[in-house]
Length: 77
Image (cartoon, rainbow, N blue to C red; front, side):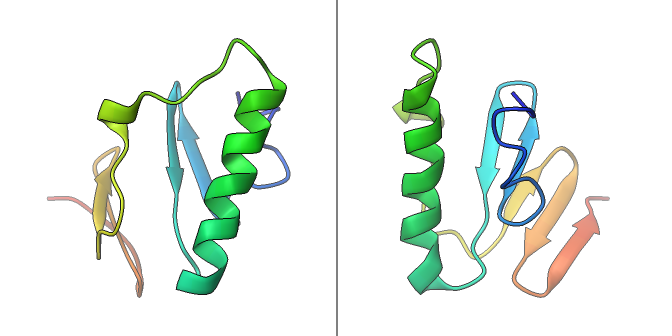
């Protein structure tokens, strides 16, 4: 999956196996970034979004034992 999202990786996307994290740089850009990821998934018909795994509008998220916040990434203790 990394090759599919190569142009977005570490700019606003992080991937681990089948988990995709779209993090925002600004709220204005975030909606566009989510649509870009969704369009990329649709280009590859075998890929889809599981709605029960989707979360939106969080100030921080825990992802792979990291805590991702607007000010940066820290390791979860």
